Length: 119
Image (cartoon, rainbow, N blue to C red; front, side):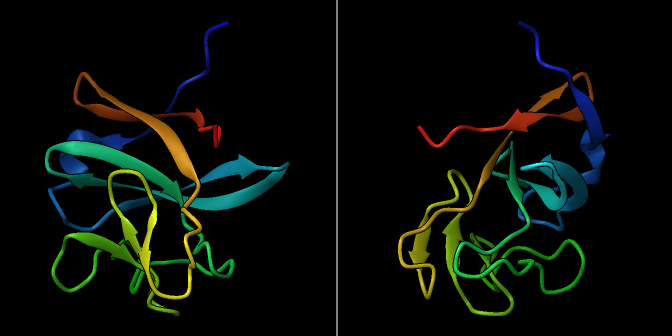
C-alpha cells in the first residue's frame, strides 16, 4: 500500500547544520510539532519533542543545533541527540531517542511520509 506524501518545503529552505523547518503532524490522533533539518547533505525529521519531557527542542523557532552545529540540543534541558538517528548522546534524556519521521527529498522538495516505527 502506498503512503500518502505531504510537502514540507522546498529543498533550498534547508542548509547544512542550519535552521530547520517546523511543521505539524498527527501523532496518536493529535497535532504534534515536528521539524526537518539538513546534516551532511541529508535531510532528517523528528517530532519537536524532547525525549526527557514533552517540551519543544528549538532555542528559537527552527534553531535545533547546538553551538558546535553537530548535534540536536533541547533548549530547555540540555539533552543532546544525534542528528542521524535521534539517539540520546547525553543529558537528562537517559538513552531515550527522539521520535523519527520518515521524510524524503526528491525533485527539489522535501516530503513527509509518516512516523517511523521503533522496531
